[in-house]
Length: 533
View 1: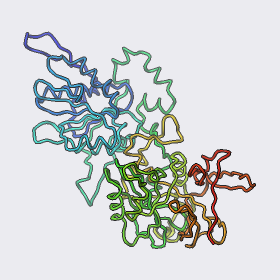
View 2 (view 1 turned 90 degrees about the vertical axis):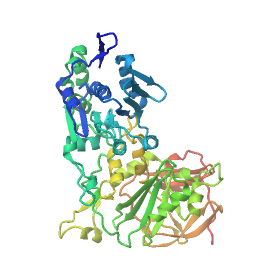
View 3 (view 1 turned 45 degrees about the horizontal axis):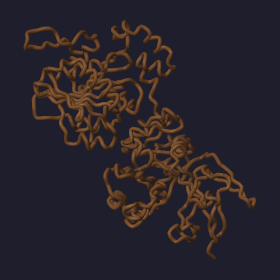
View 4 (view 1 turned 135 degrees about the vertical axis):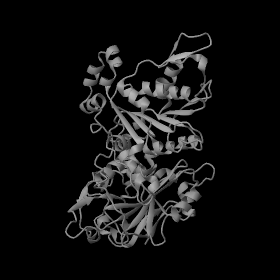
């Protein structure tokens, strides 16, 4: 980092010290995207600080943004070192706005990306150069959004500098662009094409940073004692050793298919994850094998329920017979301002909903199971392949290939560090589309008795509990369909000796409200009602 050297009384000379060969390549690179990294100890954070300060000194008036996923790490690794090492005579720092202003008019803004709210913070803001520290901790959505901030009607360089190691929510997109060099080509919209000439990657390991090896002689041994996957990634920069993806069995080759016209006889439904910060909706169709196809996605932020319902209806074609929309249980909670639940508001605005489970782990495990192959027998799906080339099986969960957002989120979402059975809840912007993927498992009572759901393959009548009326009513049900091939089944015994079998997510109405099978405790009172004659 720059150090002040002796000079004339009114002159300050900065000495930026010695850099490694790889660091010099980073400093000299002039493509729009410059990425430095590969393994720990390569000196990436140090050279990023050097480059940011150097730009501010070389180009009076330039505006620089340095971003990291979380502010505490940004403060520790970027802000404090720069404040310590820069001569105080040449800058002022505002700790409230996290803005460093140089005497020549240049500035460095230190920011973090906290998900959906960050888009509002950076909307309409211009920077000449942006640094993404530990870029693999940021989603591709964050990367793409921040690109739009690199602009300005001036002669300053316009670039994005990235530093990174393997692993994290951004592992897939960083690896695609800088390691595998697989660039997007969109004949229909050439403006979306990614030009290989815009990308530079400087691969570096601790072996390229002799100062670390000299000052920390135990560092190599510490890296060598890491678990195998971490050792290969952090010591040698092996991008295939560590991804951390939660849905490891998801593959764009297997679970993604070109768009086709959905047959009219396939049942259709919607699922959504709603919040004022973001509405995420998925449209699904089920083939004759029980295979679920996601054929449309929609998301928009800052929508009240009325507007959300309007968007959902507007994105549903008149010919699509949507049987229901699955929503999380918390939407049944009464709102303090209106006294109504979100479900009531959706119903008032033309969206029929069904309560689904909010057990994240169970739901994500179901998704994993559905991503596995099931036998392919549906004649229409077979006809989509060339003569004789239809496979014997296909995954039970499929996505149309133009649904880039949900596909990327499924690839990006990470396993939880504390609970590997669950997925990480951050960054929140990649969890919405995954949370909209829910499973509905409902047992049906009919006027002809309790019939196994697998036998209800035609439309008919069933009994359903009307919570508003507080009674059981007869209603029409749609044909049942298989959502997964195998599931763990639980059994409870009532005090009258009857036994009930159900999956973990099946809900029962108790004296304390609705409870899932796996939430029932001994002594819970199940409510019953007389069926209408």
